[in-house]
Image 1 (cartoon, rainbow, N blue to C red):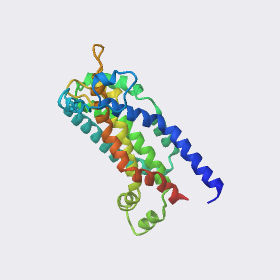
Image 2: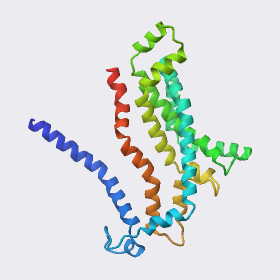
Image 3: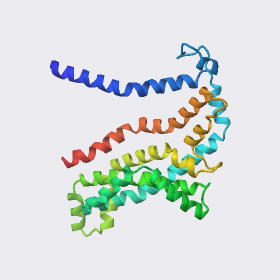
Length: 274
């Protein structure tokens, strides 16, 4: 291996380290806060690894503040929004890609980058008029504003780079448009669907603004539950960090275990189209 290649790899590794090191540092510090007693969290100089671990921080979070109820609320909202987004977004992405409807793709992109607050106020008034505020239904519906554009945009890019020969062969054999989509396009698009699913789950799970505005006391989601642990009277860093880690853990584990599928899905279309 030449010196230039070795230097390039070292430089790339150093650049990646510089980019990710702040996130790693903050995550390690959050773990440290979650396993320390409040006296250790308030000590100076700061203590990274305490002499005694405060595991009760996690136990208190799980047994109080309706954490498990909020967990199931988040599971229902995220699962429903992701499922509906896949049902709508995958066929829509296929249709836009095959019809080469570039203007429709631009509309989807605009919907994707538009801040959610732009939709929140009119939808809030609509849900208030319908009497749905405080239930899970408006949260599921408004999460589709986040998940559907993600799924459609990813699937457009994937279907545009997949070969058409198999679909044309199926049509020559007498297959209908639906049969071509169901039996030819969908199996090829599995890596792209996996990526769309994972990203839709992540964006929906972590959404905070919609939940704090539309949710009631019984229908809050986990990000809102963590926010409600912050008070002006007392701020307990240990339980707060433990709750934040518990909220982050599902999507973090999903990303870790599905990283190969994510890479494969993001690169498969480009490889096939090359």
